[in-house]
Image (tube, rainbow, N blue to C red; front, side, top):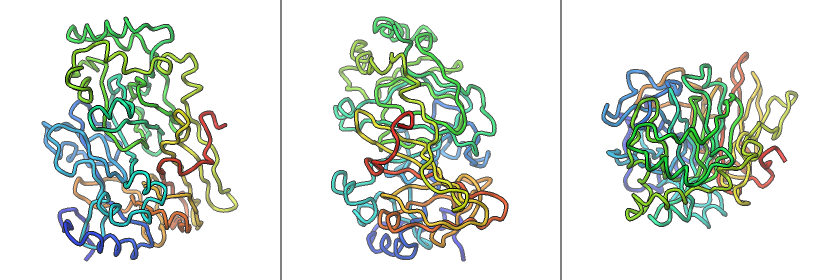
Length: 418
């Protein structure tokens, strides 16, 4: 009998290596993953990630609505009151499940690639959909050096707005990035001083950009941004650090605790320190869009070959390629073999077909505990050997998004497609 729900699975806590190896062998290195739902107490779900409306508050009203789904994640969500495995993806094999984090630890370089395993000893990146009815507070993610003060990791990230998940733009499809050139540190400090007076006015110092489905942005650490209401695919570093610099969003309070949650305790009320966390040159860059905006760039394939591959997330941060992502479209009835430089997490956003013989299908609606056939982790050995994609539909394209780890794709374009 086919297992359809997480509740029917046995969580493996011993002999993990045997289960991980069996899963890899059975699937030719393409590991099936269970949906991984994450709530945010301070946000309002946008209802476009296909979670059943009755399950939006499956963690409880006090935890907030589920507005995120994380992909191929070995990173824990930094939420208050979190359940023990919140944010962590599971590999499914038969009626058993094992954490992807533990499977990677056992399979090592075969799973994530020799260079990544040697340097990080883990899968150090993840991606997600975040989907909100309105905007997120103007916030930043700490750099590696800043996060290290608390034993954490910094968080560079990228954005892509898949058309399949953005049939409506919701309440505010615009994102504020950085600060208006000429803004002073004293002005930002004054916003922090005014935190408890209502709207602290940080957005008066920023400028918004209209969001366009099928495009994206590169967002380095220490850069303020207030993501708008498009459903966003977000490949990023394996961290959940942030600091909110906006005190009021759509009439909802943003607690001071969310500004300082990843700041050393002795600095929680040091306004100068909080201002200095920001990368001033990048926040006030007069050419911000030119240096951060991403349009899709062809990466391979053609209509004659039956598939089209595009770079959707790319670019370097101080010379370092944190993460990259591609969108693969397989035309109706076509089959293709795609070779990549390394492991990747994959989510299906349209159509149906197969990947190395395993079924891929994009669900229309998902219950909270339901297993799906839309997400996999492709091991390094499989990606390099070549993965066979088949579109079993005669009319609809099969579209998948896949993201890669650090420095895996040196041939990827820089910002601006250079």
